[in-house]
Amino acid sequence: MRTSILGKDGPSVPVIGFGAWPIGGGMGTVETNDAIRTLHHALDRGVTLVDTAEAYRSSEETIGRALQEWTGKREQVFLATKVRGSDLSRAHIMEAIEQSLRHLRTEYVDLLQAHSWDSRHPIEETMRAFDDLTQAGKVRYVGVSNFDVSQMRAAWTVRPFHSLQPRYNLLDRQIEGQILPYCLQQGIGVLAHSPLAKGLLTGKYNPDTVFPPDDERSRMARFSGEELRRHLTTAVRVQQWAQARGHTLVELAIAWVLSHPAVTVCLCGAKTPQQVDDHVRAAEWRLTVEERAEVDRLLGPA
Ligand SMILES: NC(=O)c1ccc[n+]([C@@H]2O[C@H](COP(=O)([O-])OP(=O)(O)OC[C@H]3O[C@@H](n4cnc5c(N)ncnc54)[C@H](OP(=O)(O)O)[C@@H]3O)[C@@H](O)[C@H]2O)c1
Image (cartoon, rainbow, N blue to C red):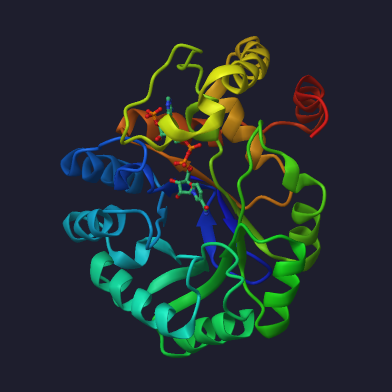
């Protein structure tokens, strides 16, 4: 697996990360044994960066079990988790990290991220608590998620950090204007989330698809009606471009995310070993600048 450096002076990480929201049950039920088998397969294939969160239901506990049963060593895995953005107070951060460590069955996490901006608590309090956890050896690196530029500036002033985790895919390109250039200039690593637009960029859904009630997509506007139709039309357009070059839509979606110079890691959600294999294959395709420009033209303005 190809690797990249996280931030200016961070660790070497694989460019494909295992997004662990689906195995927590957020996109429909995944049996624990299937989740563990999928995660083991990912780790064996070099997808050794695992992204989870306090808020990802059973995800942390499943990962903890999987890591204990894995034949490799804990140090080979880069474990990233998040504290929920609804409470980034010092008290909650200290409680949350203890719970995450317990669930993950580990003594440290490699990356602790603020899941989103918390307007109820000062960022100084959050970043100082994060810093204290690095001093205590419970956290190796610190990051933020879903922050805009002004929020990143405010956090950076208190304590420099290694990564941003924003949503980025062929259908969601809003961060290209300011956020990605800021990360590039500041040396902040980018872990892009939802690269497959939660399945819209896989080619397997159509306007009549109905998601079960325990799947978050059953409640998302973009997975029904006119919005769904519009996104699927775009997906088909770029899928044809990929297929003409011997690639699948999934491969294009991931390779395209990785082709942005600011992106360090593409966090792919997977429910099966086969899906992991598709993600690994995608990382082998390196889009040229010209190919990327062609795809961008097909997409239209961001
Ligand atoms: N920081 C944040 O706020 C935030 C938000 C969202 C996600 N994330 C992170 O980013 C990760 C990735 O995002 P995501 O999991 O939400 O969505 P995603 O990666 O865009 O899509 C994942 C889903 O697409 C389908 N899929 C994946 N690979 C496939 C393949 N090869 N062929 C066909 N279908 C495939 C699977 O669902 P089906 O098989 O059911 O279609 C899978 O659950 C998350 O797991 C999480 O770690 C972070």
